[in-house]
Length: 227
Ligand code: CA
Image (cartoon, rainbow, N blue to C red; front, top):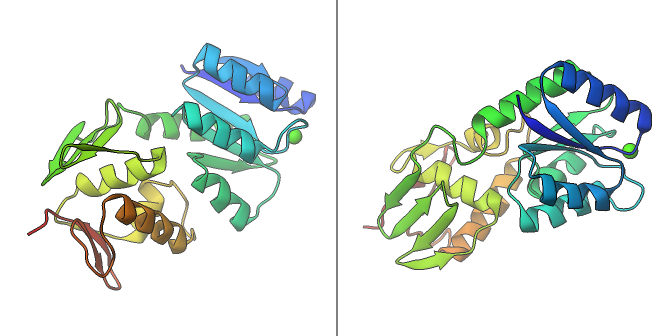
């Protein structure tokens, strides 16, 4: 059982999903506007938020950015548009997964359970990883380099943590899209490239002069301790 918050303005969809998710054993709170949803997410602290992108008072993607500024709660976006650019945009804005309308409560419930299994500080990887001067604490979700704190977005943290957990191994972009972004087959490699370039900047390195993040041409990325 999980404590879910459903932010959806369509009363028929909302009523059906709330009932179906409760029947599946979840505790469900619901909001019908973005601002009420944001407020409820902060006061009720749900385990996961299901967010409709088409809300009357604010674009759902904008709400996602506001929510991400204050909370790392897992978010599944519900979109009416099966549009790859839109999906990449919301995944980049910090969504953990998405469903395309119309979807069934069973499909949503499967996504909820998958996100909760792999998501959050309780994930099965080492909670504290140290590689050279780089230190990542998945419990506290803090990172530092040579003792100085790194200001990372939730996605950057997850990306760096995934690579640091596999230090010395080459990780493919496909694996990163699947494991860090949870994008099914067919996601855009450029999403990974953009986040890697931001991470490199924060780590004070470039692709041409790498210290930790090494591009292995045609294969993927390897994080390793500087020589
Ligand atoms: Ca809507």
